[in-house]
Length: 399
Image (cartoon, rainbow, N blue to C red):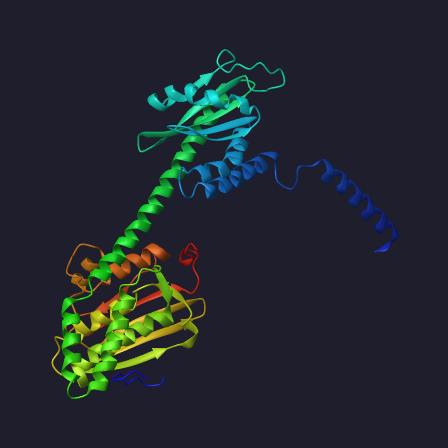
């Protein structure tokens, strides 16, 4: 038990011949049939599957590695013998036959890169001395993101039909969309990191001052208590300012909550009552770092500190099978629900402890249907809760 924090424990032959005949007929039909779905459906499925695989390789944007991995699938979508992908300065990848055509691609593509218009080249431009080479024409389509040409897709084959030109344009447009989605993802990640940095910066100077003042008050009267509090303060700030990932376990997060409460209890004494109701099943669950402690701090600073007399905070972590729910209840002074709504909607900067920050990060990680739920009214205390899946692919951080 950490010093100063007191927590409760809480028929027939002819029929057989007929059946055999039907079976033989069925097998003959299956041998010559494309399957239970139509040829059109099969083609649609194959196209969508190919596009899906290519999209995964473009998840990081218009990168060399991503384009190289996506190229075979993009070429399959165009059904051409060869395909090149270029950025504005070089050929990123050549996939398929006729690689000896590669050096001419950038010269051929300059018009596309500068004008942003599709270019169709015939045998007079795609020249080749090899009789075995199938490449005699090409379609070069620009990849444009937000009005800016970032590269091109070039499909090479024996002829350049109007159908190939349209297909190349569609594939290039599809690639551009994937790049835009990747950039949005990166922006969201950067925004989340910025939110986290902002939350770290919100470690209240008053909390630091008050904690150190409380520690100092024990230096002469109870040096052992002062030493323990100083260690708790050091561990709390070390965790709050750490740089090793955006996620942590519930166990680690609750340990830091405990450090925070130890320090606050040293200041408030018997005015601050604390109850923890923690289901052991949720302790290994990974959650966004600093997603629980700010809720507890909000309860202390804006709920109980302005209240006359003692106050009570209850922190609950509840197992719901595939989900986990966390709630912080206080019997403090409460707040205007409209003011809290503005904080969560980003319309108010009055959130000095991080409710809006935590809400935004939860929705970013798990989806818009997740986030904080706040129940409050003036002089009626406050309950802040959120519910998350125990496992989410978004929690898988890169090694």
